[in-house]
Amino acid sequence: MNGLYLLIPILSGIVGAIFTSWLVQEYDNYGKKYSHFSDRFTKRSQCDFCQKKLKFYELMPIFSFILQGGKSRCCDKSLRKKYIVFEGLGALIFMVGALYSLINISILALLLIFLIFVDERYKEIALWNNLSLLFWVLHEVTYRFEFNEIMANLIGAVSVTLVLVFIYFFYRATRKREGIGIGDIILLFTTFLYFGVPLSLYLLIAASLSLIVKIIVTRKYKDEHAFGSWIAGFFLIFTVFQEFYEIVG
Image (cartoon, rainbow, N blue to C red; front, side, top):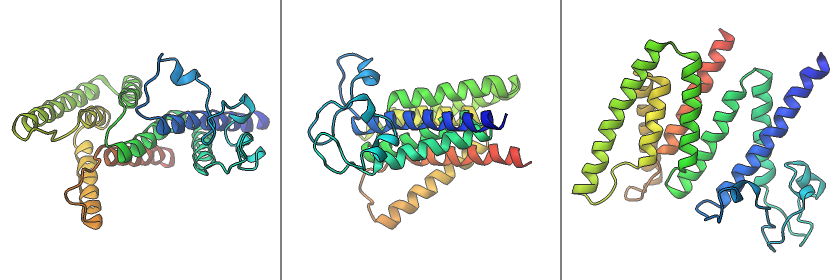
């Protein structure tokens, strides 16, 4: 029994590292056009320096980096530390999730972390990322919430979404630009569907104030700033707090 107790977190850590490795690849190739959708998952990775296709034993998360001494086999150049850092983080998140029977939260955490990095860099949210989060929330509310709670959250989410869509088209018509991105609107719908009112409003206020502080500190008043990343960050904070509060309680 003790052996099985240890095996499950280890296997979960391997899965987390593999999932994170794919997310890092998605981040590096964000916006890349694929001939076929399946290429996104099956196309062989290449060396960052000489573009030579990597062999299967060079693609093992964490282990390949360690066994190769942090260098590429093909051109003997130092690999970027981000690979082992993020793969190790993904493994740790999944191992903790397995120990506390919270693998669902581990999956959510990696999806939100990916969203944060992409939105901060590219100022947009990948559609598949938004849909994955929405699917996660739909699964959770279906199995964990009462019907009345689901309907109340749904009404709140739809109401907020209609207001945001109005703002979106109003800015497009009057200012010739977007007042808020479609990706942010989808993310906020997901947020209100999961947390409901008033908790989602607290989350929105916290995200907004944090972004304002960032703008003041950086003094980049006229630059475009990502908002979805702050929503995602507090979504993760609120969820983790709720889950572990229930465990402790």
